[in-house]
Length: 441
Image (cartoon, rainbow, N blue to C red; front, side):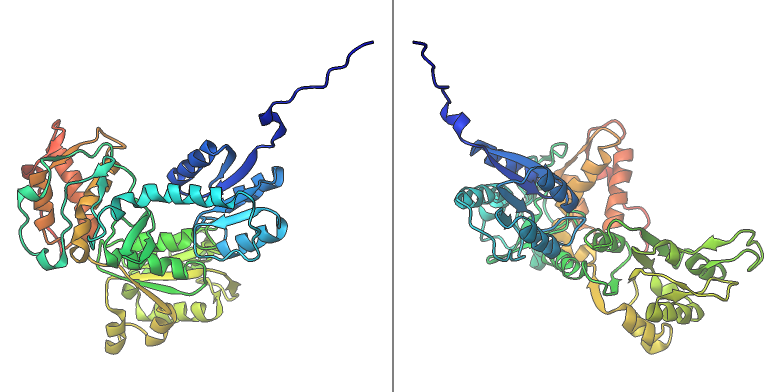
């Protein structure tokens, strides 16, 4: 009699591996969470945006989907709602404040929550280690830097060299955590392009996140060099229009005679030199975002034409009678107090109230001087992408902190670039390399 042996299966072969899909635009967060889940014997697939989530989920339905607080290409509320409808049996979690309606609690929910907590502890450990600090110490080179936060009450005092380490080693600057402390009970998601953890900078990030997904016109007010265009780009990146054009125009940089044609376009022969028809900046931003920088410099005659476009969404090219319908989201910026300009008649009040539906103010660098060490680290690392990375010593950093910065963050970047050139082949910037030159108020 022939014996037939039953096949032998190992315990691992009888268990289908648990699969998770992790979606986040933050690569370091994805990698941390994926590493922790892998250690818990999950098979993990990563996605940078909402479109990738759908592509992976349609290929292989995972047991769990974890979505970060925001994604660059899709509206979070809509994405979570659509995922819930399409995959009702999948355990769906999010790190943000968007509620997931009727989400089933899978058998491994506790493992997922544990992995999420562990991954976020990596970001917040440095801040939570010193809960008494109102402004947490930045992390440089993977460890807390020996820098005292510069409080508002001692900002005017001249810092001593002893406040800083002898040399700040910047080549290995760790990514500044996106999740930063605002108060003991509240955490704020800071936009990655807005460097700084001061409360006034966190407020800018908060306002951007609140209004980005809407069509609401936004007016950005702030001093020259304070990062108004970065705010506009952040609004566009977080909006449903992020895949459409972001078109910027500086109203102060174009002569008054040409600004109308630049904005609205023109037909051939409309004026001397118009040898070809041309689409204007407004029309080229169709479906996306139009950024009008230094809107306060726009001539009054052109303000009335812009007002008509804001009201009805139609424009008329120079030299043409027909109107064109254009769909754009308008974001304007100015270093002036436009509300005061309306009182003097220099700016149309009706246009102001249509542009300033939502107001964002970018602070001067003097208002968040405690962020100077973090900004220095950021710009030094940025310069190191094209040249050998340099370091900065305590005397140079103290000199930077003591400066009044009339040119704000832009001036700081230029001063560091100038110092790097003046240092020549030296690998460390010292106080004698810091040259403020002629500053413009």
